[in-house]
Structures are given as structure tokens and as C-alpha cells.
Image (cartoon, rainbow, N blue to C red; front, side, top):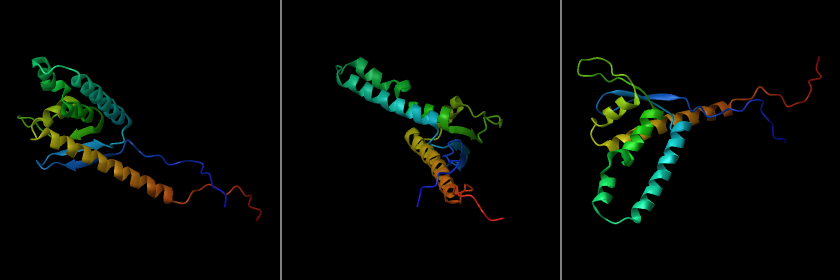
Length: 160
């Protein structure tokens, strides 16, 4: 049997979103973990951490060494939250002290992350949510692939 080439191929939808409820009660919407911009940012952060670790291994253990480690901007959790806030985070139902809806911006996402308790646990939870969106997208793609194609076998129909 010959391989049948379909006219159109189904692709993973990386724009899908999903809404989740945090243990503290607020709802938050994330894009798929397969979002290309997030994947690039994640790879770049991994490379940055490897380079920084190599540089740190060659340094003297003095005050400047520990000052660099304490730098919040270079904290892996902070950088991961910045990437999540910029590329995966879509919306949330959070209000300010006056009861006004807070705009879903990357900066407000970072502010939220500082108020939910353990930032590492929050990073993990966000990644789990985005992974669930990705898994749902992959399952959707598999269902599309299982549907019969409207493509023909290439044989002419001689019936009249």
C-alpha cells in the first residue's frame, strides 16, 4: 500500500489557552507551554545559567561573588517568572485594594507572584498549567489526525 499524502497537514496549535484556578481562588489564563517565544526564552535562560555557572566556578569566594548570587534580577526564579509573564500569561481575575480589575501585564504578573507565597512553587504551578494546555492541544491534534482525510487516492472515478 502506498503512503497517502494529505493535501493539508494538521499542526499543533501553540496559540491555545486554558483557564486555571489557583489554590488562593483567583483564575488565571495561560498559553501553551509550546509557545515558540516562551520556548526560545527558556532555551536562552538555560544557556545563560550555564554560562554564569561556569564564570562563577572560576571566581574567588569574596563579597562580590555573594553579591552577584543575591542579585534578584539574575535569580533563576525571577527570570523564569518574567518569561512566563511575558509569553505564557494571558489574563487573570485579580483586583486591587480599591476593587478595580488589575490589568494583565507582565509586571502585574510579577507583582502577583510575590504575593502568592513560595515563588518556586508558583513557577512550578504555572508551568504545570501551561503544560496542561499543551497536552490538550496535542490531544486535539491527534483527534484531527484520526479523522478521515477528504483527499482522494489519485484514481479517477470511471463510474457515470
